[in-house]
Length: 358
Ligand code: ADP
Image (cartoon, rainbow, N blue to C red; front, side, top):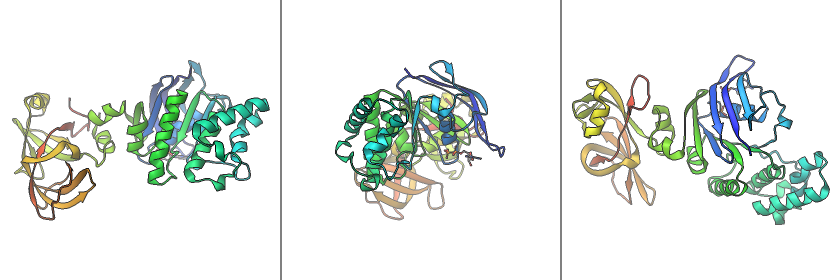
């Protein structure tokens, strides 16, 4: 069992920089939580406070109901996997994986069994006698994970473990981590700035900005019902298109392209009842746009990705607000083409609070 509870946690560094504000989260046993957000938003600080590598300035941390706020890192029964692997170059892979158990003076037979079992899980059995510099980046990352697995910690902590790998290896290693999680059924906290990693790995995502938690939820919840403009534009690739738009009866009028009127459904009109005559922010995901009667766009770029085409352009003519549409299949527009776009799904946000209007 490993349930974590972070309650009203703040981090204020010695130079008075507050990196984390009132962080609250209950992590269930066996859950894989991904902390995601842009660089500097406080993800690593939060992870390091959980690990015990940074003091918690305010608030409390519980592991299985026990307050461990003041417990030293070595007594927390957690294992951290870093992005730079931190392997010992002069030791073999076997010795690297056995190291923490050897330090603890575990029985050599037990150590041997644990190292072999971890190597088997990670596909490293044939690499055990090699030195780290004889392995690829992906293999080294697996050794770093193996070092954590042999300790059978209550909680695994990952700090951007894939950021030193190239794109192809990143995808493969990401899938390995997911399999590892399924196999170990361990509680895991995983930090990344990459929204794709968050969407593909997490049971639940914690999306952060400037030290504050913006939204906690399943990947689908964050994608489908982002709580505010920050989450809406951070989750999803290419990012959501955002336009200032005035609510006028059963239409929206784009502020920067007044000739463009976007029809509201009866439900949307009802949702926006309190916003008549006001300016809101209209969000449209590129994948929620199709070619068809609706909004006129002048094409500026056309990127064929195989299954899809990203078509960039300006709404209502050149100089109008920029838009990106992700169209199905291989579409061959060129600069200056006039096309019509149909919107399949809208997201609506309050311009003042930036929160979703529901
Ligand atoms: P992230 O992991 O999301 O990139 P960090 O948690 O590393 O963000 O940093 C959050 C904020 O705290 C940043 O503004 C960063 O400059 C600041 N910070 C991080 N470490 C320290 C430190 N040791 N002393 C002072 N400020 C720090």
